Length: 351
Image (cartoon, rainbow, N blue to C red):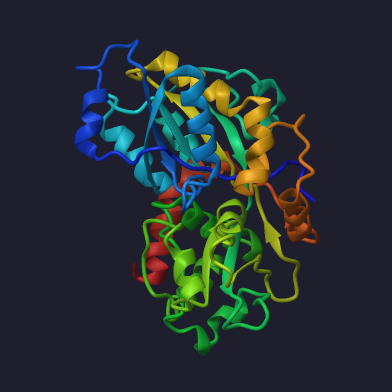
């Protein structure tokens, strides 16, 4: 049973790139009442009912600071921030591991310990205070409950011909949840080579690449796919409007189902155009009030250890995680060797 509590998220406005240019250091004053967030997808509600939606709306009402929001895959957001490093457009960057470590290593994040970060576990924040988890989460898969009367249980089942062109996972190295497929496979199969051997065989059933994990769940709900990767928080929230979604955790044949923590981690962008506003938003996201809403509204786990949710979503999520072995990846190793792991996956799958 996880130590944290659940949550999900949303944004007020999805701005086009031209509109964002106004927020650059070249034209925006540091006291402008705006803050720009680049984020991995998953915390914004499909119908304006996610954790981000509530938090951003409450933040704007309390401070008068407008939240401008851009989302994409974790790797995509980091690469965008890299391209803009000479003239940063974002104030806050939110990504999944190992991309938050990657962003830190590229000098994209400045040191800032938000208020309340002392209540965040050491494993869920950077040792140098460049990032802090704001929503805890776990990696998982989804299946179509309408087409499959029971969830698959093992990786090996997915090799069956009945899954041909009915299975898809997001692209490792681009999407955080896609990279998580590699991490879990290497853990479950006992190393890089056996994991890549398996994923090479699985490719016969795989539809193909996807930059965004969030786009896969609707395909599963509609029956276009039988199985896809995802994460507990995002998929639990999506299931409110996608009744055919079921969450499951693959096991190696003869083993236990496993998962690992995959938190949404936030950091203040180096030379952010609105640094002070970014600090205020990070403080607000980690406040007890916002953290208490993580499970109730978004279906995620609170990043703060002193927030204990007891709402119906929290109870359901605890039940979902019951009996699932949670392992801790070596994020330093993954950050250091991510490129070689992705290259090995490309070679194994012909991607």
